[in-house]
Image (cartoon, rainbow, N blue to C red; front, side, top):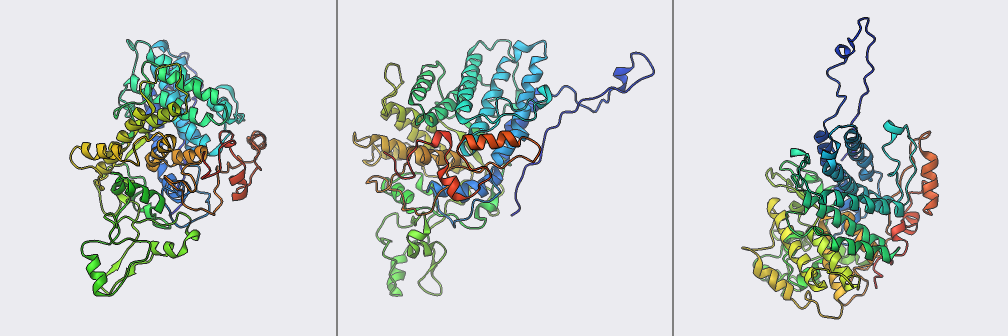
Length: 560
């Protein structure tokens, strides 16, 4: 597979009028094929589409090969952190921020400027979706001075530190919420260019508030008072955060096929014993959605008896969910079991069984194999994520003095229900294996009542964390941010033990130096200010030199 890089750059052209020997003929000499006043809706649609469509390479080189393996949501052959990463950074500056900034520039020049108030507000929310994802892996980056080349001839913007980025985005999101909360009468909209929310301004407010919660949980270890303040702001906002299926931020284009058969690129992906064992122990409806079963079907016990064979000791043949098996996240910790990832159990010449199933490939790649009709739904910001953040903050005591609109347990249950239903919806659209039958209500209620799921007054926070973790199976950056900031799943936990892991894990990506003669001084200054060794792409540096939000976080598996 070739490296997938996005080279598309939206170029704005300035026309220099030709000299005419006839007075007042300037407008006749203007090239009619040159766009001097770009269409705002087209600019928005380009950015809105690009925050999703660059992700094919990200899924293959980052999510499936690195981030979800580091978080132990799956396991695969270990590979080096290749140079085919950080498409998030490239697309932010080439395909997202330029157009959103140009929309604001165009609005400033228009006589009907007040009628673009909501459109302008939404440009900030959309940009922050991608910008936050970018700093999550890179730290300091240009933002407050970015995109000022055309207007201010600033081609060497400073790299804002992560605290400044978070503070700037919180202010921009709050301003966007205030703008969108005003009466919408007379406001222009984006037409079909807003294929996310179809110009429903209330849902854009909800997305902005959930993004504020995303920032708040990252802020917690650096300044808990800021986290508490932001939580209160969100809960006191009349519209609030994402609280329904229709308010979730989802990309849904029928022909979108980001992964396809590259789901197996370089190595298949398997479930770890930690996640599969927990899903089995609670009879979680997401088990068949997330993972595929092995080959122990039908009368396999009779076949074993016939050929006098015995399964490996780590498989209980009487397990009612025997078809779902995982293995070590770090293969070096249990090489005997890890050998079964790629080896069949040969009972006879006619019976060669896979003992460990794969991840559910069609759940990630609906067009896997020869399927031409499966649909990829990418839920980038969800109701479940929102509910679990709220439950977490209430459980930690951050909800005192204002209406949290429910208890920690109630928000926790809302998160679980939404997660299961959303994952089932993704599976159905992908023509993959669903987890619910009928309306699914009986299964969901049984799951909520399960002793290993229901609040028990002993380890409620861990239960919130684990459900949050299980929900991030489709959001690799959020999954990796979660395990960094919390230290969960926890080593040796009696509830959900993390797999033993010996390999050093990078906690960030290296940010390459700009081309020589450009913004090198600002880049180097930012690297040094963060405590990074400039240009060092080695794992020792990446695993020990942490981002600002991550500096006070526990080690992997050391949550408390």
